Image 1 (cartoon, rainbow, N blue to C red):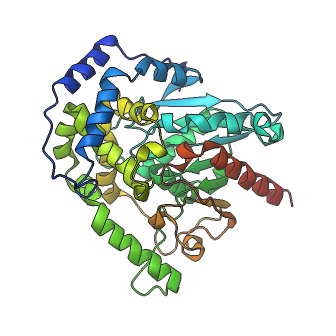
Image 2: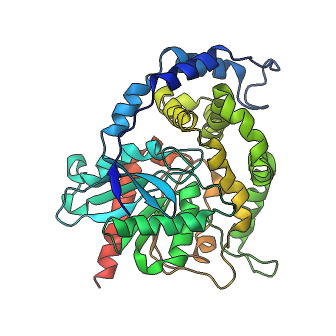
Length: 388
């Protein structure tokens, strides 16, 4: 398996095509005063799309991405893109940090310096990491698989091979959302490879719960909330889990449709009561992520993970992992805040449990320094415990 340096460079033709498509947008109507009740509001969309067309600078995004060493390699037929940044200390701890959905490797870039050079931010250079941030296959600059059944566990296999290719026989991991599902299954399949695993999405993947499982009151309340949340908010998941190809024609053809589809999630999964997603992310960050999906034409491949979940071997009643687990809870997403005893059903070796008291689903993008501190603190505990 060869490793090649990779420079991100989108053609002017693609950028001009994007602007032309935006100009030709046919806007829908809207019930006056409906705000977010029916979905993403028309006024918000017209404002951010106008910024996308007239003010957003993709070349600045490219410059930020290319500040870090980007590479590509081929593993199991997948052309895998990743960023690899060495830590400043004498013995950095290797860590893999996949992104979530609908996100991209771009959302994890701001966390890099806090992990690779902690001494610049009041930390100790001996706590530094070698950071590997892959684009999950079918997202961004990694190719997709056109085979049915390409699921989270197959991605875990690829990521383990990537880390071994980079010379890391054992490594740590941090993830959330789709990244957490991949890493959680990795902890089941490759525990000997894992130094420790930190997540802001505990409970993903879910432990096995049967109708005969005796639950605590806290677990019953949590699972009831999750069921209600799914009924109220997860229409997208049902669609993508049944007929993802149908919506792909719209999302791959209309940049405004794609932006609405993605940005609604960034709003709902951040802090809906605030009413303003721009209190949490600037327009350039939001549109950089949307632009990556548009310019790489990967929304359909990324959406297919919902469908492929039916092929996945999820944890059963005999599954658990002894890999040390660290948990940092976001503040606004209750369905991502399971009680500790629920998480312990799959990860009994919890060595760190912290409430961040800020942020939502995309907390590593909102608060990269805070999340990095939690990661460093957790792995310090793991290294200390391993030395006993």
